[in-house]
Length: 347
Ligand code: TXA
Ligand code: MG
Image (spheres, helix red, strand yellow):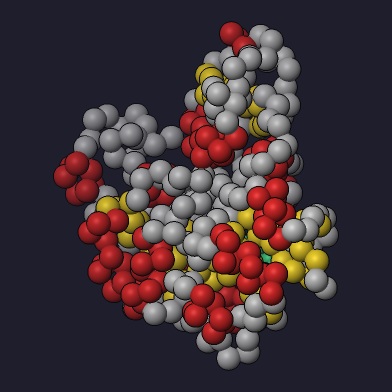
């Protein structure tokens, strides 16, 4: 429950805005707009500190991937139970080539989708300079080239940034600076505010294995788009390593989630999709529609913020209308299934 005027405070703290809010939260993260944050963010990263930054997918909790202390601070701030491998974010292909070895198919995908919401898992060069804590000692590495502020920041730093989604372990990924500040604000110094992230879901992760392309995590680029460029089907299923985004329960709101509902029970909050409502929708204590028009891109961009908004209403259960599986619908259904999974598996 956050206060809209002052995201560091609980909802019912009254009207505390602007300077009063900044004074109150002086010990918490500063929130700076992208236009004025670059130098401050650089100084923190140079010093081995972490910074929350906007990317086109979700906000990332970024640290210098070559600095073990910085990487350790990422895990500490997120409260991750284990040291899971992180994505290394690069500014350009040259930086990517110094870190990993590209096969022709991965190169083709990078050419088509970078910068953008695609992460490639590739063989890791031994002399890449990436700290082993960031790769969990694996001989592969996940690489991504983000659009916008992140890319600019990495180019200026001249080193890759390790950046998992900017949320405490087990919580929903932050898609606004306010959500990030409310979750991590007492543990980090700076949140760079780039507004709501346009894609709203984490990147799609793929890996070329024995000449075949495997989908490790559905995400911000639909599988069909990748298949069209690759000229091959994406394989699904067992991926070798257990990724935290792959744990059954990873995107967990406080409320229970009931998926694919065709009938709403009294007292439930409703996460709707499209123009046609499930039976009994009038009984819902709160309603958000991911996309009135049935547009899966719009739905993806609204997903996390709407789940959080409905959670804040305090309903015991969030009922979710069916979402089609095509395009970004695969990733949306994946995140919903994880949010609905038993909580004892939180990662
Ligand atoms: O959109 C995104 O990808 C966001 C933004 C901030 O870039 N980042 C993100 O990072 O979602 P994170 O750490 O929450 O998820 C990264 C995923 C994890 O599931 C991790 O296990 C997996 O990538 N991963 C990292 N290295 C891997 C590797 N070598 N092989 C397989 N999976 C790997
Ligand atoms: Mg995450």
